[in-house]
Image 1 (tube, rainbow, N blue to C red):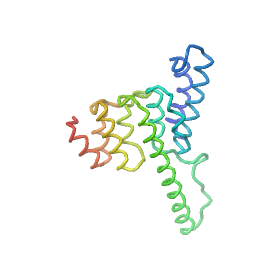
Image 2 (tube, helix red, strand yellow):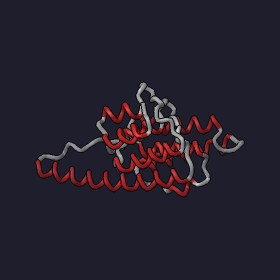
Image 3 (spheres, rainbow, N blue to C red):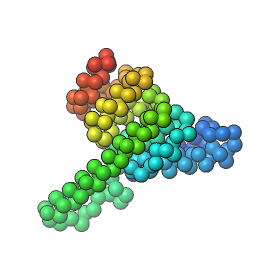
Image 4 (cartoon, one colour):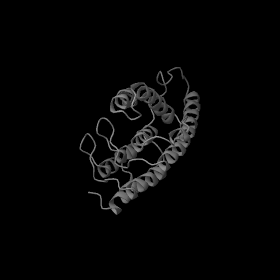
Length: 191
């Protein structure tokens, strides 16, 4: 699990409990914080059931959308070093690519479903990264990212908002040479 995802999961428990995302009682808030943390990890691994989010507030759904689109982390324990031949390496890569593609497909379905429940297109995570810039760096297919960013823009996302490093979505797309995203952003007058 990436350090950013771990930090998000830990901070979700604290932030949700402290901010009172749920109801009037601390026990309810803490229970929701635990659920949000678990759901974030499930979403990241393509195992979250989107219907679970139907009754959540837009800020909570936005958080889960971010969890779903964050780039995937290496498997727990890292990658195996026991591969000895080129054939083993090729077979391991093919198997890993298939698993990654299957997880990405599940994550796309989850993110699409979460976005239909209502979310804040200008959501910023706890370290100052807007959802729109997180979408640019996602490892999900570029076609889906363009679709998701179009939806965010249509719902009022600020396309010129900067992340914690002072980069806009356009800056990141140019740096990563993501032509489809660059064209989308420039088509909406990104700076």
